[in-house]
Image (cartoon, rainbow, N blue to C red):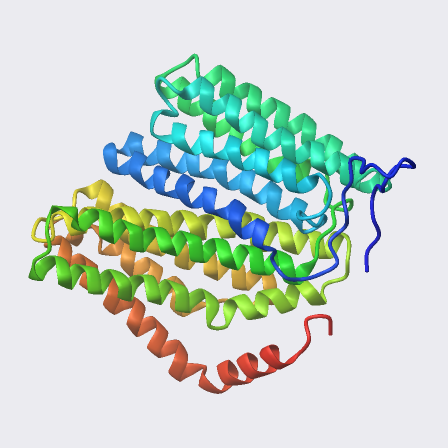
Length: 401
């Protein structure tokens, strides 16, 4: 059992406390916190759907990146500190409120609500840093890492505030710079001082993938608001096939192997760098790919008989390709093995984008579903023995082994 960072005062009144995490399980409060991120993802899809242009897609992905990195900060924090102990619980509630305001601002994050978005984002990020400072009271290495994070975050927030007064290419450039600086902080300030509980950290990221996949199901429902006919029913069924395939490709074996690799790594720099690369970094293109697929599903359900616009075709096929390419990199980072079949499938999807702007949207969705089904069938047949051995072995081993 890990120790209490700060305790109850002499008078018996509780002081500012933070209790280090001692269990692998994700707590109900963390799941509650993630519900706000559900809205944030939905808003990113809505932003791109309302402006399905190259500029709209870029804006949606920039907003998603900023929101992703704020979520990542809390995933690291709650893998150090039990969020349901002491005043941390109330701080998490406050962060939820701020994140909700940020999510509500997403559709106008580059327009009238840009400054409010930046200010709400500042509250979310600095609340997490303040909690980290409390948690690092007796840990100088963690404290140094947190101070570095605070400096980088201040610059990133400042750039978003400056972007709220700009527009056009300059505004987009400031957003991109803020995101790059934010995500580059773990490299700039090192990885030695951070701490995490491997099982919890891996599970938290697996749950956020499920949340993103849930957005694809929501997109089907939103896209079908214009009415339900045979074409819409077929598209809805194919959409579920695509979402299920994306789930299968991650959770069947990949997530199990990644969690085991993280658990087996030596605590400290090695484990932190695997967590940073495999989870904080490489899960972002997975989530972004799923959000782009959700956009494609929404637009397909709206007009199943019409060809997709090139931007939406790129979202549907390119988003699926990005998801698969992230898996290729994810596997290489964890076990140093190359997934040629997933790479080939990604290349085929990108190559089909020109055809997607000519075919009915329903046909394009059917092609995506068929390619993913073939990929899963191939892997199931080609690696059947290895798959069964890994699944049974990893499921039966205690996480701490």
